[in-house]
Length: 425
Image (cartoon, rainbow, N blue to C red):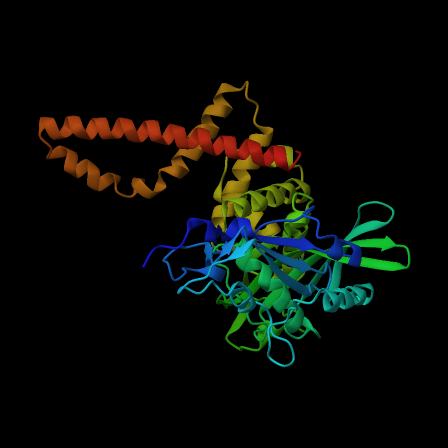
């Protein structure tokens, strides 16, 4: 059997398009203005019958459009192409593959429509949309626009249904994203919405979300900890502490680089700090490079704002006591506390003071080599038994290690400078 013509294969990441549609005029215009494409499609389309990953088969010049309402996130799906493959191999059922990831309606069917008229009716419902959960922060952008941050869990009315709509986007933008079940009340979800006061009412647009799980932490023997009234973490008589772990952070592409990631992370921090007596520290689950950067920026900003006399505090060499201070004030884990201290220390480091810059460099390098220092004594014993040729090879390896260590240090300092620049401090 002849292989299908390559023109009937489409790259899924190019063919799939999302667009936030706020009016019937936008819907019927069919304009490609303000569309955004997914970062990942392998979870949705996987491997097709031809063994191709991230490819959609059976259509020439394929365009898959997912129109989404800004607040309720109702979905309209349409497919356009200039030709469909005719042969023994069936074209991929694109809509069915997408529908598998969509939430279900009351009848158990995927919640989407292919009818523009039905979608237009759903657009009318946007005028009555109000975000679910508790409003925890409001930031005014200008006279008519603000950003509101909310928190909810599985006990919040309407949370399960709405969260299913939010999670649909994660699979397209977070590699290896997983859906969570809000039946476990230890899951907390934070959301941000752009709020606009327009003629005739208020318009909300979903901007981003953060999920956090409040893991139990075993009671510290001999330590008294105050119970937070109304907290569900005290249902277990053997546990009185929690260790929250931030799981996934997502900001809709049209709202990126507008501060929503920082708002979400800070909201999660504030939630934990409000019951500080029972929180051991705050962790982040398998952070991406972008999440590491976001966390660094927010943590350094908080450190400089909440540590008394930061210029004096961070001008001193790092000590275990200093790290514990950051942990107690900001609920940072041990490693993150050290990293934040080093970034803030760089902020106040006098580059003209040779003694202080040398001490800063050696402090960081000492931390970087900790994993191999433990083997030093064993290494010294081996060197005593080495013959001349082996010793020469060993010395060359040591030089390469020192060169690599210096390169790692320079790259790390560059990261730190970038964080300080992003934090505007």
